[in-house]
Length: 116
Image (cartoon, rainbow, N blue to C red; front, side):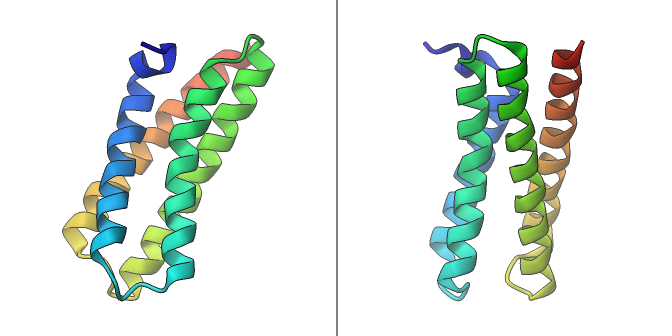
């Protein structure tokens, strides 16, 4: 088992990425460029957490967690756009939006802890 697999933030990012993957697969009406952007940003959260956990210095680890948090914001913005366009149901929007808020808070704390 890799160390990142024990991180709660990674587990949440992984599960959220699965939800996004299934959502995008099931919604043919969303333009390809939007689906691609949301899919890549969602993967970026999970992958930057994993890669950051492998870094030896706090500075390097922190940089990857900052990038992951930026991708959380990107996903949240895309989700809001899709909601406003009527492409995502309110319940799904609320559920995933809350998870993004939680991921953002967890990553913020991790980033701040690495600054000390």
